[in-house]
Length: 118
Image (spheres, one colour):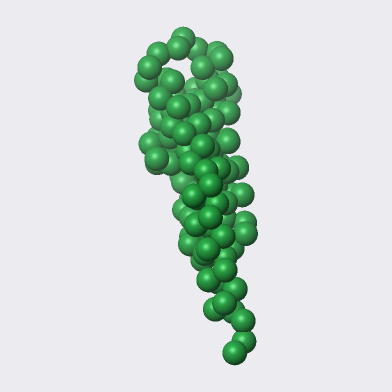
């Protein structure tokens, strides 16, 4: 889901911002790759049970939603342009569900039990 949202933003909003700021399109690709790297680091932190993982994922999902919404504020609304916004908002919704928070807290407990001396 994060890959689809980031690739939609790469094809729309990131390339749009690179174009209006007179930057080469390589900057848009680099920005998308940095976002994906941060997403995967956040997923690894969540899997390891660190507290910073969910906050990192929510931050990137919010950034994706803001990029898509700002692009739609400046351009015509098409379904292809709205899709990254829906993906990012759905991703934010999933990150805030009770089951996801419960799963993340179980991973934290498992990490604390591993660290605790016996």
